[in-house]
Image (tube, rainbow, N blue to C red; front, side, top):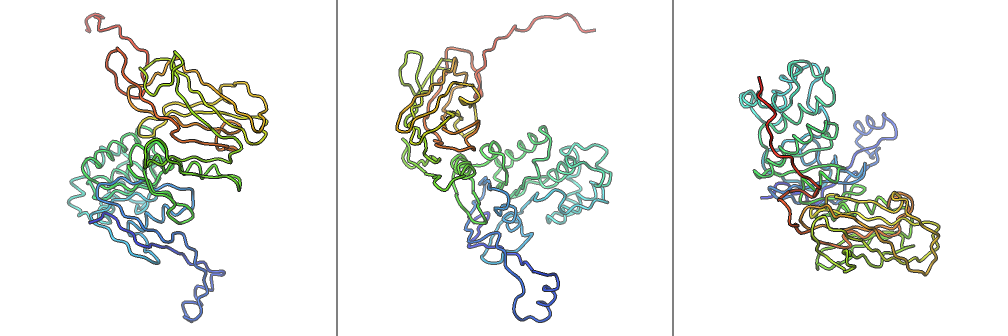
Length: 414
């Protein structure tokens, strides 16, 4: 059985030109006096038990409405929705809480709303208080809480007892860094135990780290469904779209069946990307902390007064490891002539990365970011491997130059 199954789901709200039209429509039951505003339309989504799915998209794309439908807070205008198991959700900060009740009292009420008995919530009360870490405020009215304390309590309550499905909107974005790490650890533990996660976020790191699938919504419709790194790259390309001739293309790279996003107005294009070692040889594997060059060849198809060339190294799950460009490095650039080819190199004195596989994305654009007049963005233009050098064991994506003075006596403590 699916955890969540949506078939041809649509949600519309009624908009009346004047408040009295609502009453007139209800009394006369004749010609409708409202206009339907569709916020979701033709959505077909199936989420399996244990899946971790991110919902991404710009504001107004329908993400929060989708979560409200999934939890049953609102009903679809059309289509069918099926869900199985107990759902815990944090949709909006403070939803279901009463400002005059204490944190303890709100917990008991929230438990009943989630279908959990008073006795079971009372047993979970100590662990909720411990996780929320709001101290004496636990027995103070909710109106005295800061927004951070509010979300601490809301998350602690929603996750006090492991749900079958955990649905999170962006309420966690207001939490402090310490609590965000604490929440992420609990979510990972729930994932390990088989909880289904549906997660709305604008944070690409959280999406790549916590989720194994992403759904991109655009103007109320499902625009893309796939692996987080692929969907995020497509999303970034769509955001960068500024001109009518701008194109977003999925291209097949060296690995069959693995689409890579390429986008831009093509006034300049990346022709090749290469990784070169100290001897000048093209390589796809190198020892950690070895020197290397990233060599980029490009073609110019329209006169350009200036051009920025940039690259971004990502780890195997798509998290950013390091990136920069010629604008920030203040590298020299002269006007570029249409029909000519050019080359740009980046010298890396030491590839200080931990062992593993990495990819390089390359971009041609103007100014400091590819969001400004992007000519060509090539995601995963090159994949390479960093192998362990003859050095002590270490973990992580960074390989810092490090040593230790060892353990030495500093005297007896009195």
